[in-house]
Image (cartoon, rainbow, N blue to C red; front, side, top):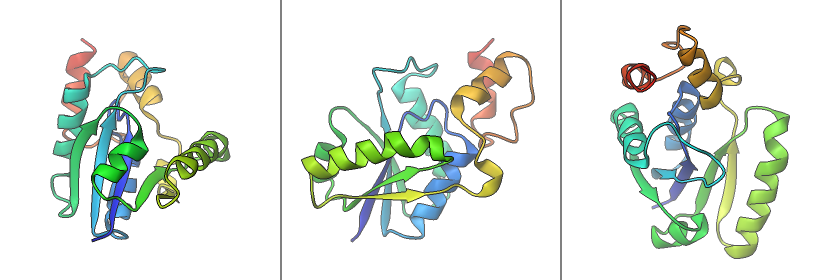
Amino acid sequence: MRTAIYPGTFDPITNGHLDIAIRASALFDKVIVAVAENPQKKPLFSKTERRDLVSQSVKDIENVEVTDFDGLLVDYAKSVNACAIIRGLRAVSDFEFEFQMALMNRKLCPELETVYLMPSEKYTYINSTIVKEIARLGGKIDCFLPEAVVPYLKEKLK
């Protein structure tokens, strides 16, 4: 079984994230969406809340499961026998950071590949930070987020 991990903070999961998960599910036998802590970010939602929102958003994708993890991604990947890490690239500006991370992960775990997927064109401009700012300012967010996420974000920002 070819297992891939799609890691991220998902604060919250967007339609762009969902698009990548769906597309990865067509390429691998199993995709694990792995909710992570990032010490450089201060998430709006707790890790448990983010995991639950991701789970609600991907519940209809048969070969996608959701978990969270702590520590090094490569260690988690080894523990679940993953062969690949899925990363989304929206723009050239994402590439430099992602390239450095892929090289570091390859050094730590040479048998683990990084696979980059570009989201569908209609999602290339979406990111969680911008969506949260639009929501804070009272803007319409329904077109950026999975349906299950919208009420939670609105409630969190009250």
